[in-house]
Length: 228
Image (cartoon, rainbow, N blue to C red; front, top):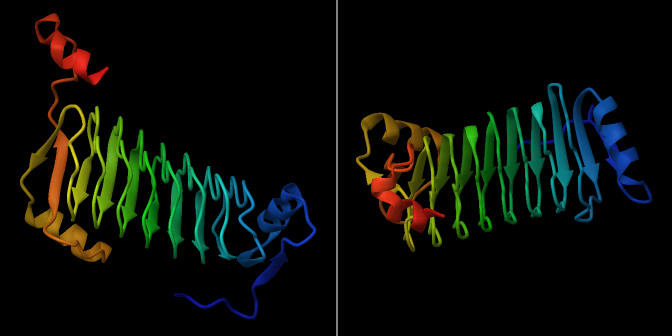
């Protein structure tokens, strides 16, 4: 865990409205330590410059959403939609995350050291969402690009209706989603996972799109019927 320097700007959330907290964060340069976040929602949204932000405690919904260039550390847990629509930068959660962590991200990396809820990494369009623990149902749903890594178990529907992108699971898969299929791990995949630093509980399994849903065909109506 990286330390916070003496030169850091300190923002104490106690007694301040969310808009004021976010204004103080965005006005800072270099590094910000945010104390007493108290699981408040919408903290650190739309950070659009290089800035390190450390939340010293748990945060609520939509923390660090629309991030573009910042590096965020959360020393606690977070609510749903962590880093939603992130363009670039990084987010590290030292605890657990709620549902829809890393939803619709275009780039950057989200790392959760604990578990994450349902719909983790849905509609990803790039970037990496890495969960050291387990994820809930329908994670990776409608993935279009990017990489989802799950070090432990994946609940029902992993990778449902994914079009492109890659999912790695290091534990048990309850059930594959529609058109998600298992593929062979390459040496490049193994190097990527090693560099990421997440240890699988068992052996890594790689999931990709089966491509049956890329184009509608009335001859395969039953396939689409199941997917819908």
